[in-house]
Length: 306
Image (cartoon, rainbow, N blue to C red; front, side):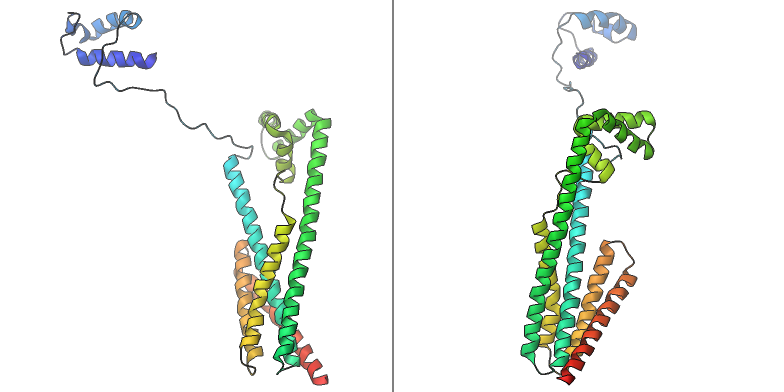
């Protein structure tokens, strides 16, 4: 109604310079006092004349405001952040798996090469066995670990659901106390707790108290496969180096190639974890060097004794 009134007033002002069809004196609309006296009557009973210059107005509309959680993050932003954190965790686990593959297989092939300087067959057999055994070990360990974590999280969800079913009012108070501890005023904390409980009580408690999401369980099979692949890719570096390089220099050059690979994995893992890169690289390189030196020494002693 208001917008059509504005259109009519605008058209009346524009038509004031023309001869109106009713024969009325157009100058009556040109002065404020006549306009103010005549407009109320015209607003209640009139036929709006067409106005070629009028612009059709519509109520302003826009996207609904996003619903924010108690900590100020919109759901989409929280989902994106959670997804990014999950991907970073998987990437960091992959880098560490590759690091394990590099060190483990490098130690085996360098030790065997030290024991049998001219035996490519023994080195190849030992290297392949180390890769297969290491990959399966990593996969099995990751499967057991992630399965245990998933079972624990599901048990926590079930327990939380049972507690809320038994005492819903106590759940609201518990949630309000959590947000009071985070700095909200008592009234605001209670309002937030009630609104979150009305939306999804279980999800609200899991997110606030445990940092969990009911539908966000890690797949143990996916974790196992990722660990096995990461270990195998890392293990290929020392394996290819020891098999492709000339016999006379294969041990020292494999040693160097492995240290370079460890420097890369150490730097990447530090970057992903926001840790000092130099310190992480130094630890990784020194640990790998120590492992290869020990296995080379043992292989050399065993080879000499045999």
